[in-house]
Length: 288
Image (cartoon, rainbow, N blue to C red; front, side, top):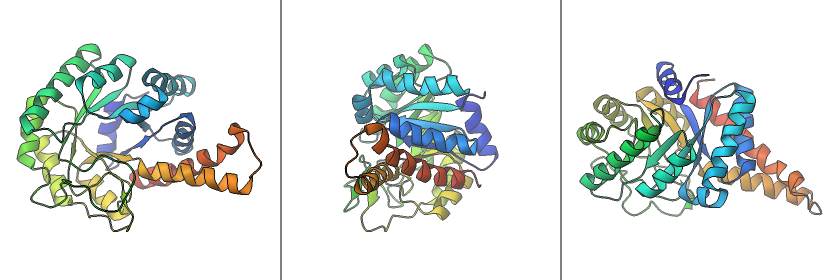
């Protein structure tokens, strides 16, 4: 079985991208894993700090590891949006396959300083772990938004600059970079999502010299996804869409079965809806 680094390289070669989907519980994980297995595609599971607090850091690692070992399947676990070295250390020590330090609200030099510390610790613990960092603020919440988050860098003059990306990568030694290229965390209630700046994606990938990760993928148009992947995005994050699918599936099942009280029965609606949404995204990201 190929490792995560090799699979990312392979995806770039194919002008495809790996799907990264967040979970809060084992039901979400089951829906994502079912979709990936049916398509025979690798998949990355993400847990944010809040999701890790709910599910458990070591528990999430154990769940993903058990699926990988039982099915001999390329499913990997990433510590999504982590805001401190201490939390990065916690995920690394728990056996995560990848971690993300999010220092987008810090001054540039401070972001470099802490990211570099995270890289040194992670690589010292496990040379195969991938470390990602972020450059450019795109909001913080995976939810339905009424307005664009204050400070989100979606205008061309405020997006991540290629020369800054190159300096950041050189100084920190990160494996992956998540830039601000018109993307937003969450989904706007109006449905009018900002368009991605594909030229900026291409310029950052060339300057940084490492694979790019697109955060805030929920609500992005299929056309923008395809163009961004061709321009250098190797991993796409989806969370808000998963949360909406989960709730929709659960609500529909309970509406149709109002007397059902067995969780293993009524949670099937959530699992099936998550599987449906993830399957559609994986097909798009892999040109299927």
